[in-house]
Amino acid sequence: MALPGRRVLSHRWFAGAWPVAARLLESAGVTSHRRRLLAPLTGRVLEVGAGDGRNFPHYPAGVTEVVAIEPNPHLRRRARTAAEHAPVPVTVHAGTAEEPSVAAGFDAAVCCLVLCSVTDPVAALRGIAGVLNPGGRLRFLEHVVADDPRHRRVQRALDATVWPALTGGCHTARDTLTALNDAGFHVIEVDRFRFPAGRVPTPTSPHVLGEAVLRAAGSGSSAAAG
Image 1: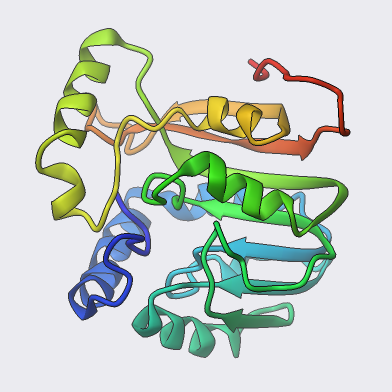
Image 2: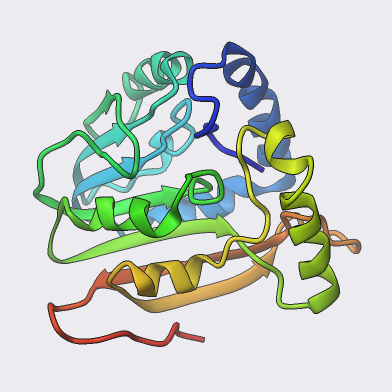
């Protein structure tokens, strides 16, 4: 799945199609995962690729401010409407993960079904790292490359052919945990699960939900938590 498409940022068709896809995700139970993703957050938070603001109702009271960035202008307008009803202060701006276009000073950042469709996940994560305070945390919910070799081969075949063009730049076989490590984060918590949890896996069903923190300069690489 591709949340706000990063290779077709201005395409009105994607902005129109995304709310339909989002409702399908909600019916499959994604809201509970959104709540798990956001519940530990406190302080000032950057949300990257906010789409039409589906996360906004679920931010906890400990969050003092959310600054959300969204490159698609049509989705951004909808996100600004959603921000008016959020339980915490939310402002919505143009920007991408690679170039957040906001000043540094965030206690935490959120990536929710976004890294599948950025052009370069490591560059995107480094852009996020650049606006976090020292020791800043990144909460992430992403679909990722499958552990099963057969499933992984299907994902990679789709990524090399029709899938990105059909889904606004989404890639099914992204190794997000490795990208986090390469971008200077240390993964301290990760839950691996399948969503939707049907009997037959889909190309985007392997998911991870967890938290990473910025490594101190010169601390070297880290292994992902199990």
